[in-house]
Amino acid sequence: MKMDLNSDIGESYGVYSIGNDDGLMPHITSANIACGFHGGDPMVMQRTVARAKAHGIGIGAHPGYPDLSGFGRRVLKMSESEIESMILYQIGALAAFTRAQGAQLRHVKPHGALYNFAAQDMPTAKAIARAVTRFDSKLILVGLANSLLIDAANEFGLRAAREGFIDRAYTSSGTLLPRTEAGAVVSSAARAVQVAIQLMREGTVRTIDGKLLELQVDTLCIHGDTPHAVDIARAVHEALRAEGIELVPMLNE
Image (cartoon, rainbow, N blue to C red; front, side):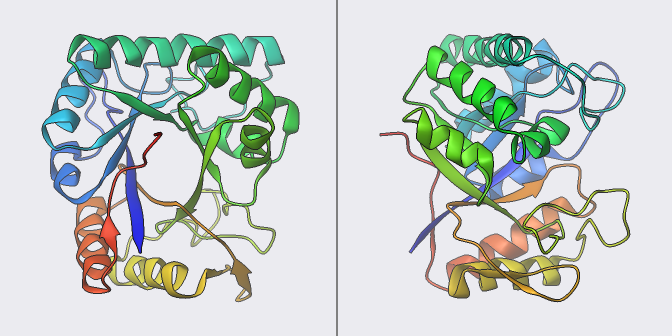
């Protein structure tokens, strides 16, 4: 069995430091790098791409709403054409840094509120998929497993990576429990390992209300700003390898 372990990183900007990217990189296989709208800046993007390349990590763009003050975790009212242009702009920005450093852009994963809204709103999902297709139809579009974003990727003929979360709680409908609610974020490495192993062995995850939700996933996510993210990544990496699971980046070939 093979699995990708990804993390949202490169989200620091200016004088603000968010997460521990250097600590995470030895334990993940794909990096979703912020593109300057919800986090990140040109210097951070350049540095993060270079470090991801040095670690042999798959590099992806992590575009979000233009909401730096809200860290991209607020839904903004935007038209489909605005969303499409916004995604193109951010992919292009990160692609400039990958190309300049001889690296390869492999995937696109929307961030925060945009990601969650696209999971349930088909016009938004299609706008994202259309932007990715226009930029490079060989890129992988990463979306919440069983969501409309995966459906949109399939409709546009893109490779889709179904994502599961090991540091977030699920609702019984398959969405992520909002961060404003108690128990939404899993900061225990032991609990995260349990979730990862269950997803790999059984294809299920336990929801916040105790139900079993069926999920087939191609990649597992650890948020770079989750408390104890490095400990979680290290523990999950070691546990999956102990289960005989090979950890590899998403491949768009």
